[in-house]
Length: 207
Image 1: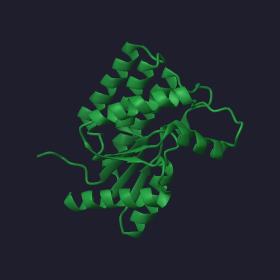
Image 2 (image 1 turned 120 degrees about the vertical axis):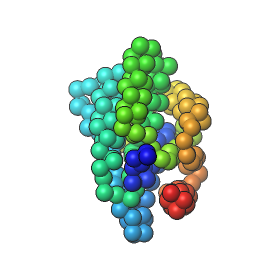
Image 3 (image 1 turned 45 degrees about the horizontal axis):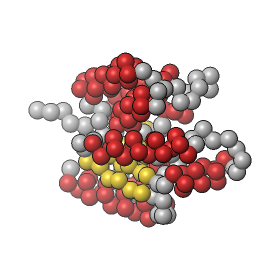
């Protein structure tokens, strides 16, 4: 008999500044009020040493290894819902995307994909639900400017985000798991939270 994890695991991913982290914390409050035990697995990019440059193969490897450690821990959590701020599928996406952008070699990409596949086969770390948040590139940049202030140099420029968005949607369209896609460009935080809350709640009733 398969030893299925007790918690329902939900991975959140998407275009930068599409509202992913804000949504996670909003859902945490709502589901906690509903009586669910919720755990958040935060994005491992927050723990990368500042000496490791952004948009490098080394940084991606560091983040991925941190994600894998966090995901192994999930099966031991006494929670009903686990919200993962970028996880297994996001790591697969980046292994492919960095190669497409010439940031890592094909060999490095294949190596990381094999590591992810091996961990999933051994520890069953793929999520039950995948929430993909999207927005227009213009809206993503506008939100980023509002956060850091106009005139501040941005690491995510228009061309990079366009490539990111194109590859992101193509990749997640091919992912064979339960998923919900939302374009948040013209939606409020409350509207997005309401839609995703219902989606997860309906899934939990069927599980």
